[in-house]
Length: 312
Image (cartoon, rainbow, N blue to C red; front, side):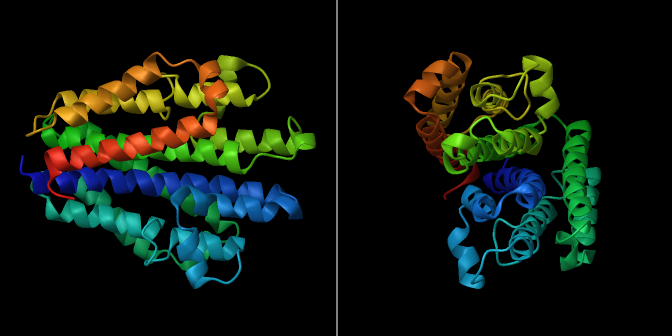
């Protein structure tokens, strides 16, 4: 496959996954902010900006931090490269460039999603309509992923699509977990309290794992159990271990010039997760572990780009 085509398919899937992740983050953040105290509200509002690294860009446009301004910026701002609007547009544009390499169902799904996105009013990101909008984004992403899995030939385009999806998902899961643990830590007297519980429950819901946690652990929500589920448990579809397993499998099925470095790093990261121990991770510092993982997953993306998709 031409590197240009692989690049388009890779980013098509990555942008749709990014749009879904943003909808998840915003949906949960909206609920957390509404239930937060005046002392913690600003901290909670900052979380989506911290996760996406767009704090500076937000304050370049807005003097104050508020829920309506933040959701508008993260959902509809065409100049924000992390916004849902921008991600869906980018996914559709990439698909348009390689329509002959993807199925008609994939193209029709993305094109319809973009047309519907353009019909939403900016007011849809505020008030009671916000939840419906975020649910719509998640449903369209699920539909696209299902259509892709169910219709595309199991060739290189399929594998590059999987690479884009799971690289983005691993990055998002690590960032969401790190923000809760490192930035949204409650006061000492609040640890184990209602606010702390609600924030951990919100984190689990943002990655569709609240019910899974209850099924596996059947007790109070403890940070070490949440971290174990989202980092090491390969049964959890959005865990780091599950994502790296999918990435490693996809890389094994594609060949490129000088791709040894990408495949070696992928195998190293997967082995680290397969044989990881959550107590050792906590002793070394969860924030430090996640920071290193984010650096590694970024480096893996760079190596994949160089090996298969053309110059950066």
